[in-house]
Image (cartoon, rainbow, N blue to C red; front, side, top):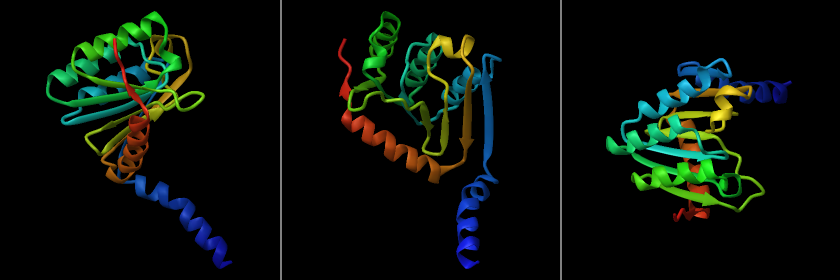
Length: 171
């Protein structure tokens, strides 16, 4: 009985610890996923760390560049093989020409993370690829957890590992 109580308590900890957090969700193609991604990027004050599989959505690229230009330290690591098409390469050139640091990672069959960590305390994740098709053609979801520095710390450690494995994108 004690083991069951302990297991139940450990299972509920993540839900209890999120109870005091602000959580936003968005879905596509209904239009909420990308707008939530853009809101997350636009609200950044000091840092954005992003991991992506597909990387070509013009609105997302513009938001990243705008953040960089307002003084936010923006760094992105993406899957190498998933971003070899013209739209992705154009997006990659655009953000790097505007000061965003970008690395590609080929250490895995696919680097399938879709995450944004903002200001060391906000985490956006979900199925939403940062591509136009995710907003208009696919069924996708996004969740943003605000004021969650402990959660952000775990995601940042994962991001840092992928960043270290990546190589700087060269045009």
